[in-house]
Amino acid sequence: MRKYLIALVLIVVSGLFIGCTQGKIEDTIAAFETAVNADSTDDIQDVLSPDSNFYITGEFATFLDYFDGFRNVHYSNLDISTSGEDADVYSDGTYNNGSTPTDILFVMKREGGFLSALFGEWDVLRYYDYGDFTNPVWQKLKDKAVPVE
Image (cartoon, rainbow, N blue to C red):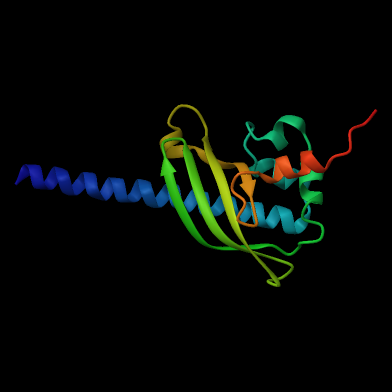
């Protein structure tokens, strides 16, 4: 009987942990959507991982400029897959108030150090759209940039 009780407690705790993780990821993606729609460099900086190429280069405005012709954006039908400190989130996305459907991939990273499994935040590491999950938006922007001479 004792083994069953312990197993039940572990199942409940695991369920709470998974639900909490998914909720935090959903909150981050909602904050990402809000930051893009508000064209807010401060807010997008808050949801991008410090390991993101956008964060490293400080090109937040350039990243938000990518969405200038696409606003408003909306993400739905999140399919979240976590593995340790990383998560892949596939989403249906719409640009231009729903007139441009697109398949989205968010690559997420858990931040927070010690006890991050319980209290860490999830940030966006890479963002892909239009079903092209080999070239993140950062790479698309970098490839379009004109070198300064």
